[in-house]
Image (cartoon, rainbow, N blue to C red; front, top):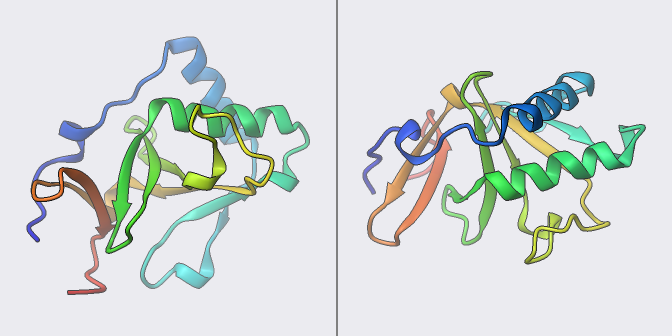
Length: 142
């Protein structure tokens, strides 16, 4: 499978200015933990819902990612996560399918939000399957 394209061709930072300011404030306000277990093959950070003092803020961020993100398959996975790219800040944020229902309402079982640096991953359009795929820049599978 050939990795072609530029992530800027697939995504753009979306959201109105006021909403984007609010979301970025939430992101900066909360603690992000480096995921040590995945450091070697999928460097990213996460924030836990249970550590947010105001659950409404957590729900707002997950809902924003869901509304403004795109579906992409990670590696050889057979399901898509939802990714939102903040090119200005250099991060993308991702939530899992089980974090929301079909209408984007945040599920009570949603427990974390992940983020990674855009520069650490490749994103490309898989023309065969008509889906967006992503993988770490370091090759970990054939």
